[in-house]
Image 1 (tube, helix red, strand yellow):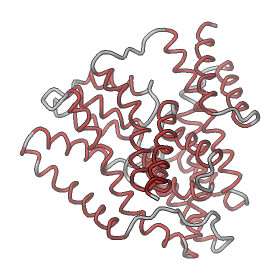
Image 2 (image 1 turned 90 degrees about the vertical axis):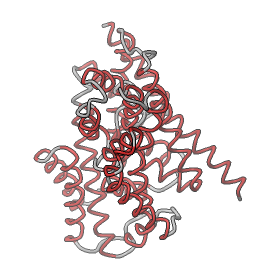
Image 3 (image 1 turned 180 degrees about the vertical axis):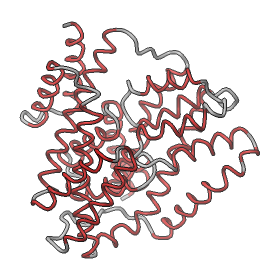
Length: 395
């Protein structure tokens, strides 16, 4: 059994390393890549179970796509699988941003900019594919289509992470008001976390959130951990939402200059994987020690830790919650709202920040056809999209 679990953990690491090397476009696109690789191709879990997991992680503070990846690794190969998923998905962008902090990574020139633009267009196709696939499964009737459309309208009025959490919460409430229906398909998530472990994780999450600021005077290392832990613990939705919090924790303290912060932010847009790895760059360029490799590792660990602690804390109670009839109604509404949230994100920022003309739209549409019609693997579409972006730059 132990040998089989070790083999599965290696499998998880390989899969998530490939995703970490190819998942461009931010957290929404990451969820699309995860769905294509792990739900559609490998069938590690059902569409409905994946949507439940996405909805859960969207409710929690922390990096949503990394939390989903952590939970998928845990489901597949236990704690070693969870660690393998985190390391595989995070390592490529963390290394790239650390090298950039040392001055070894330069994302300049027409070819680099064209490739980056092409990768953004691939992200448009990946998210569109996810919206279509999840919409067919999770919005099969007029009430749930209405919830998804209402979620888009809500996000137009209340943008940002608060609007996203609100849309899912309101979708869950609408599902409850609609009453009983067919059971939520897919069954419970196969993630075995003992209740004692969950309660301990929640206690540690809360204790660190309260105690780290009080202990900052013990040394600069403790202060750095506290600053990055605070940023990771208070952001909902992950991704770009963490940037103003990190700026407040580093630039406002005088640890990082505004120019350094903006340069790192620009580099973070050009690498795959979670945007939270921006913390590795910031840790490396901190003025006071620890900085360099030690600062990068410390900041990276601290910014991810709270999101994983609260996820582990909630997982033991998730399956019991979702099997109740009222909970199933809540989840039907929440899952429909997730489709609306993904649809809104497909337009802004994914489409609006990537497609600037008809040629861009044509390349994005071709990438979508490669994924959905000809079933070309996502990594091959990434390569094709990067090449197409370079070609567009020469036109």
